[in-house]
Length: 315
Image (cartoon, rainbow, N blue to C red; front, top):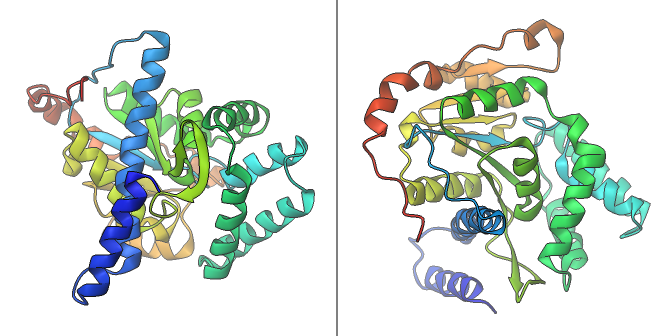
């Protein structure tokens, strides 16, 4: 067991001794979020080192944008798209792809995830990667992105991400997809990086265990908060985007929340809280691409933000 896995075991042991502490689910979400932030920055540093590029310092040091992936940045579920590519390469049976797709359809229709479906899906995914190298997964991700996912990026959402980049802000993806695959999407889109589910690896090979849990719901909020601390971000000046009511914890963290292609529950929450709503699924609303509130106010905050020192590259 790696040090992160041991840390999780110790936290869970403390829970059993203290009935007033956080639940096991909350602890796993916290560990997943912390691990995701660490992995995202490590991947970012590794890529810069590989090309000999110096750390990139954004003009606006304390503001960032966080984008969910499935049905927010990418049409459909990214994990299903990756699974299609893997099935085409004979990594697993087509029947497994049908099963994955059916579970995604159920989730999109009901807006709720079956604990049985999640457990089964997680077990199959971990069984697939166990013993494989992290480099192999990343390489497969690049091939499959170019073949399948590149044509499924929502232009409207991509334009919003570019607005933040043009304003000198960091732009991060936040997804339950494995962090290595999420990083591929971020890299191809020219974004800062990606927060995703972290699978434990030793000496460059996956062990078949997760660090914490799937990055989902509360875990995403923990990941964004952990990254904000490491990068010196002011969450009140940040913006979060998602299509799902499951991401309300993440959306609630930032000063500006935007519902993109929202499910019915998120649409209701957005209306009640006065969050912006953008729907790129129909031409009726896709044309209304304006500047989110946080960007409109970003110029004033940018002058102050420039005085704040960013995370040291040596850390």
